[in-house]
Amino acid sequence: MKPNLKLKATRVEKGELQSDVARILKVSEQTYNQKELGKRDFTLRECKILARHFNKTMDEIFFVD
Image (tube, rainbow, N blue to C red):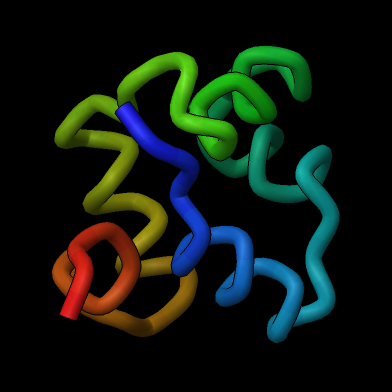
C-alpha cells in the first residue's frame, strides 16, 4: 500500500480536515489517518462515498495517471 496522495490533495484543496472526512465515513480520525497514509485500505463503500462527496470519480481520487 502507498499513501493516497491524490486523496490528500483533494481533501486539502477542498479545505477539509481529516476529522471532517472521518465523520463523513463514520470512522475515527485515527482510522482515517491510517487509510490516507496507506496503512489500511479503504472499502469500496468508502471509496464511493468519497467520490460522491468530492464530486470526482474513484479513478480521479485513488488511481495514478
